[in-house]
Image 1 (tube, rainbow, N blue to C red):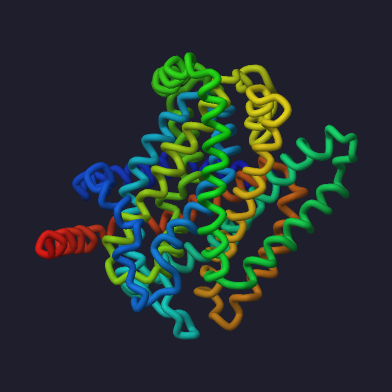
Image 2: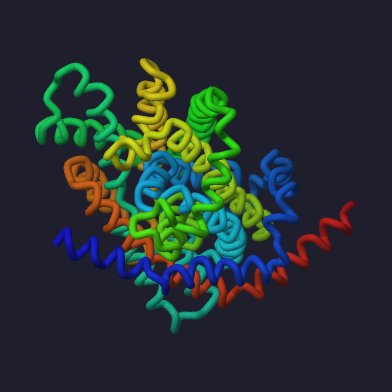
Length: 450
């Protein structure tokens, strides 16, 4: 079964998915008139909250929505996903992650604007957003089968098995192995059950509690990780230009990639970027669709900051740490253990504990938000009255993730992400002209108010 999952993920993440996410995103970037570059200042200004409307429909503020979305994206995709990218595709994969991020900013702008433009109601009459409602409300009932495909893949793909797996791995490596404590199967089960209890305390309180916890944890978590990484980068600051040059040159030569094929480097970068910033997958529109906002364009502009923070800033810093310390060439470690080796090399004694704390907060905050995404997919498929059953299923799979193999876990999530991307990108491109019209209307009104 594990081999089938790995084969399917590798097959679906070939040329078709690259064309859909990168090609579709490029079309949206051009169609928008390069909004991510031209309007990033306005997007940052919106975060101040001066435009927030407490009376607007929705459950959370735009800042909380961005925090929750970043809690889901700035996470282990940035710490272990970058390590996996460098391991599989060499440093050049990071360049293609950057390209995917800028293209992804345009995708997020469109998809999250649509999540406010076309909100629906669940069976309990609560206002909801996300690709499934965008498809049904914006494209019509005849396209509902796409909503169902998205939600079925979401119920499986948005489980926290990857986070559970990597958190369990780093905890065993940092806390247990040096102390001589057994790290066998029993230990994995104990760690898995402990994580399940911690996550249950937050997610059983619904989106308000998830958003409140995320908006407090995210700034602290990003700050802690930033400071740690910047100390390491400063230590090797003389080598930084060489490493950045290596990222760019390797992107077009593929020298460090397994097999040395540039195509493999691009696919690795795009695949890991999609896992890291989730642009085009359809998760962020679900949480941004719950925002108290009457202005779709405003929500889209705020949402597009996600891929920039996540991939251009955080992933680059992680990649520099792994490359500057040289661990990617001298160790067989994969995933989070590779990043762990880099931190320990650069900051002996305390490096691994700093990363341990960052991983703990990253993983838990991602687990909180993912539960909300999966809950919404389950709600759409089976109705609001049955949706809470999903939380119990979600909690049990955290334990499964803690004891499963990394390759199977990554491939299962990757495969489901690819399936979710198909309805999301089809609906986003189909309805893009509606967003463009709303964009012109919004900025014309902004000018008139000045």
